Length: 190
Image (cartoon, rainbow, N blue to C red; front, side, top):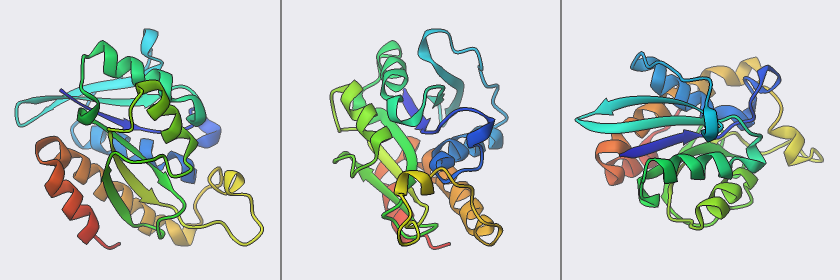
């Protein structure tokens, strides 16, 4: 089993923000396969959907907890489904990556991202895969925490929508071949 998680802040007030691009990519992946989202998450505190790629079962998840405490719900999904840490892909925003760019990483540090730090802490490992979506740097003098909670400008929407759709495609490729997905992400340009 593989688990693909899109980090987010839940609720209507956060929809369309830079911080939620991970969940937007997971939603796009689910939509492209017509999945049914389980919105009453019981203990998991995640919206979930299950599908199959090439005979392999895949669980999609989006935590229903704020970004910085999303580790608990992700850890529950991993433990409950007896998945290995290296079979987990977390998709999230990255302000240090150029706008619209994608980067796959197998493991490594949180790089200042509190949602990723929460997941690593709850899993007790940094050995999960990450797919980062570049949301650009905040303007000079703007607090990065405030920046990621802003919605995209109309002029940015086309590029970020392309990046979200490509991230969904790469997540699907990752299920079958993680290294091919990593290479494809590095080659893609919006």
